[in-house]
Image (cartoon, rainbow, N blue to C red; front, side, top):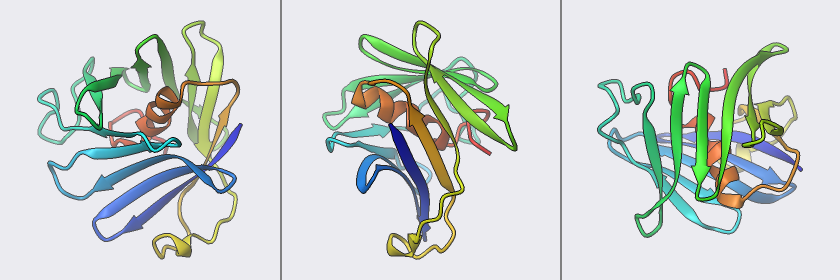
Length: 175
């Protein structure tokens, strides 16, 4: 499955969205307020939030070896993001997990996700596909991404995995 991803910006909000054809699969929204949570939405409409945590330092970045919970709409923990070191992280939901690794491939950085068996499950990288993004937030040339998912993945785990590089944590971004 190939997902097309885009970054949309407007005053005070940044949104990353991934689509399978015309259907939105994952959406990550940042509001430009220091204490505002990051909001995530999956294809089924399930909503999650990532709150600021005491493990974060003054710059807003979690310390190394931190774990940050993803909360569901009821405020319960639905999964975790684990910061494992420079360019390495993991995301988990009950019963399943992905390891994520940022690698330099071609001209840019990309993220490879492997399952517990260390087999490649998904890859996220920049894309150069065109899209008239003015319809969404008025930006003519958004950043574009491509996510290749090689086998069936739990929807919430895929949502957390694709969101991780866009959460603003040092070392796990795509640049």
